[in-house]
Image (cartoon, rainbow, N blue to C red):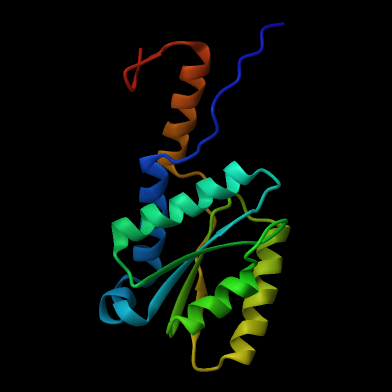
Length: 164
Protein backbone atom coordinates (compact mmCIF):
# COMPACT_ATOMS: atom_id res chain seq x y z
CA UNK A 1 0.00 0.00 0.00
CA UNK A 2 1.37 3.37 -1.02
CA UNK A 3 0.25 6.29 1.11
CA UNK A 4 0.89 9.86 0.09
CA UNK A 5 0.09 12.79 2.28
CA UNK A 6 -1.03 16.07 0.76
CA UNK A 7 -0.87 19.43 2.43
CA UNK A 8 -4.12 20.89 3.71
CA UNK A 9 -5.80 23.72 1.80
CA UNK A 10 -4.18 26.22 4.13
CA UNK A 11 -3.30 29.80 3.33
CA UNK A 12 -3.85 29.88 -0.39
CA UNK A 13 -4.48 33.07 -2.35
CA UNK A 14 -7.47 31.46 -4.06
CA UNK A 15 -9.12 30.85 -0.69
CA UNK A 16 -8.67 34.51 0.23
CA UNK A 17 -10.37 35.37 -3.08
CA UNK A 18 -13.26 33.05 -2.20
CA UNK A 19 -13.72 34.80 1.15
CA UNK A 20 -13.53 38.26 -0.38
CA UNK A 21 -16.17 37.27 -2.94
CA UNK A 22 -18.44 36.18 -0.08
CA UNK A 23 -18.25 39.70 1.36
CA UNK A 24 -18.82 41.43 -1.98
CA UNK A 25 -21.64 39.17 -3.17
CA UNK A 26 -23.60 39.38 0.07
CA UNK A 27 -23.42 43.05 0.91
CA UNK A 28 -21.13 44.76 -1.57
CA UNK A 29 -23.17 47.95 -1.72
CA UNK A 30 -23.57 48.05 2.04
CA UNK A 31 -19.84 47.66 2.49
CA UNK A 32 -19.05 50.52 0.12
CA UNK A 33 -21.57 52.87 1.76
CA UNK A 34 -20.78 51.95 5.36
CA UNK A 35 -17.14 50.86 5.30
CA UNK A 36 -16.41 52.21 8.80
CA UNK A 37 -19.48 50.58 10.36
CA UNK A 38 -19.18 47.20 8.64
CA UNK A 39 -17.36 44.31 10.25
CA UNK A 40 -16.40 40.99 8.75
CA UNK A 41 -16.29 38.15 11.24
CA UNK A 42 -14.45 35.17 9.76
CA UNK A 43 -15.63 32.10 11.62
CA UNK A 44 -13.45 29.01 11.61
CA UNK A 45 -14.38 25.56 12.84
CA UNK A 46 -11.90 25.65 15.69
CA UNK A 47 -9.31 23.01 16.39
CA UNK A 48 -7.13 21.63 19.15
CA UNK A 49 -4.25 22.28 16.72
CA UNK A 50 -2.90 25.80 17.34
CA UNK A 51 -1.44 25.96 13.81
CA UNK A 52 -4.85 25.36 12.23
CA UNK A 53 -6.36 28.10 14.38
CA UNK A 54 -3.43 30.36 13.52
CA UNK A 55 -4.03 29.79 9.80
CA UNK A 56 -7.61 30.97 10.23
CA UNK A 57 -6.37 34.11 11.98
CA UNK A 58 -3.90 34.68 9.14
CA UNK A 59 -6.73 34.29 6.62
CA UNK A 60 -8.58 37.01 8.50
CA UNK A 61 -5.58 39.31 8.16
CA UNK A 62 -5.25 38.53 4.44
CA UNK A 63 -8.94 39.25 4.01
CA UNK A 64 -8.45 42.62 5.70
CA UNK A 65 -5.58 43.31 3.30
CA UNK A 66 -7.91 42.64 0.35
CA UNK A 67 -10.98 44.52 1.59
CA UNK A 68 -9.50 47.27 3.78
CA UNK A 69 -12.63 47.24 5.88
CA UNK A 70 -12.21 48.94 9.25
CA UNK A 71 -13.05 45.75 11.13
CA UNK A 72 -12.09 42.18 10.23
CA UNK A 73 -12.18 39.82 13.19
CA UNK A 74 -11.83 36.06 13.58
CA UNK A 75 -13.79 33.70 15.81
CA UNK A 76 -14.50 29.98 16.08
CA UNK A 77 -17.67 27.91 16.35
CA UNK A 78 -16.10 25.22 18.51
CA UNK A 79 -13.19 23.97 20.60
CA UNK A 80 -11.26 27.24 20.91
CA UNK A 81 -11.69 30.94 21.59
CA UNK A 82 -12.85 33.52 20.78
CA UNK A 83 -16.27 31.98 20.27
CA UNK A 84 -18.86 33.28 17.81
CA UNK A 85 -20.76 35.21 20.54
CA UNK A 86 -17.46 36.73 21.72
CA UNK A 87 -16.58 37.69 18.14
CA UNK A 88 -19.96 39.32 17.60
CA UNK A 89 -19.64 41.27 20.84
CA UNK A 90 -16.15 42.42 19.90
CA UNK A 91 -17.41 43.72 16.54
CA UNK A 92 -20.09 45.73 18.37
CA UNK A 93 -17.51 47.16 20.81
CA UNK A 94 -15.41 48.20 17.82
CA UNK A 95 -18.35 50.20 16.42
CA UNK A 96 -19.89 47.83 13.87
CA UNK A 97 -23.50 48.43 12.87
CA UNK A 98 -23.38 45.75 10.14
CA UNK A 99 -21.68 42.40 10.74
CA UNK A 100 -21.00 39.84 8.02
CA UNK A 101 -20.28 36.39 9.44
CA UNK A 102 -18.30 34.32 6.95
CA UNK A 103 -18.22 30.64 7.90
CA UNK A 104 -14.94 29.11 6.78
CA UNK A 105 -16.69 25.79 6.36
CA UNK A 106 -16.96 23.64 3.25
CA UNK A 107 -20.46 22.21 3.57
CA UNK A 108 -23.71 22.99 5.37
CA UNK A 109 -24.55 21.01 8.46
CA UNK A 110 -25.14 21.06 12.17
CA UNK A 111 -22.66 23.90 12.69
CA UNK A 112 -24.79 26.18 10.51
CA UNK A 113 -27.75 25.42 12.75
CA UNK A 114 -25.65 26.50 15.75
CA UNK A 115 -24.64 29.69 13.94
CA UNK A 116 -28.27 30.45 13.10
CA UNK A 117 -29.18 30.07 16.77
CA UNK A 118 -26.38 32.38 17.91
CA UNK A 119 -27.33 35.00 15.31
CA UNK A 120 -31.01 34.86 16.28
CA UNK A 121 -30.12 35.53 19.93
CA UNK A 122 -27.64 38.23 18.92
CA UNK A 123 -30.21 40.06 16.77
CA UNK A 124 -32.74 39.95 19.61
CA UNK A 125 -30.20 41.45 22.02
CA UNK A 126 -28.92 44.05 19.50
CA UNK A 127 -31.94 45.28 17.48
CA UNK A 128 -30.04 48.20 15.90
CA UNK A 129 -27.31 46.01 14.44
CA UNK A 130 -27.60 43.97 11.25
CA UNK A 131 -25.91 40.57 11.23
CA UNK A 132 -25.70 38.51 8.04
CA UNK A 133 -24.24 35.06 7.46
CA UNK A 134 -22.76 34.16 4.08
CA UNK A 135 -23.13 30.64 2.67
CA UNK A 136 -20.47 28.02 3.28
CA UNK A 137 -17.67 27.72 0.73
CA UNK A 138 -19.20 24.73 -1.03
CA UNK A 139 -17.97 23.44 -4.35
CA UNK A 140 -16.17 26.56 -5.51
CA UNK A 141 -13.99 26.15 -8.61
CA UNK A 142 -11.05 27.80 -6.84
CA UNK A 143 -11.23 25.33 -3.96
CA UNK A 144 -11.29 22.46 -6.46
CA UNK A 145 -8.12 23.84 -8.10
CA UNK A 146 -6.35 24.15 -4.74
CA UNK A 147 -7.24 20.55 -3.87
CA UNK A 148 -6.01 19.39 -7.30
CA UNK A 149 -2.71 21.19 -6.68
CA UNK A 150 -2.35 19.54 -3.29
CA UNK A 151 -2.99 16.11 -4.84
CA UNK A 152 -0.41 16.79 -7.54
CA UNK A 153 2.10 17.84 -4.88
CA UNK A 154 1.49 14.60 -2.99
CA UNK A 155 2.01 12.60 -6.16
CA UNK A 156 5.28 14.38 -6.78
CA UNK A 157 4.18 15.82 -10.12
CA UNK A 158 3.93 19.43 -9.04
CA UNK A 159 6.73 21.67 -10.21
CA UNK A 160 7.04 25.43 -9.81
CA UNK A 161 3.34 26.03 -9.17
CA UNK A 162 2.15 24.26 -12.33
CA UNK A 163 0.90 20.71 -12.52
CA UNK A 164 2.88 18.71 -15.07
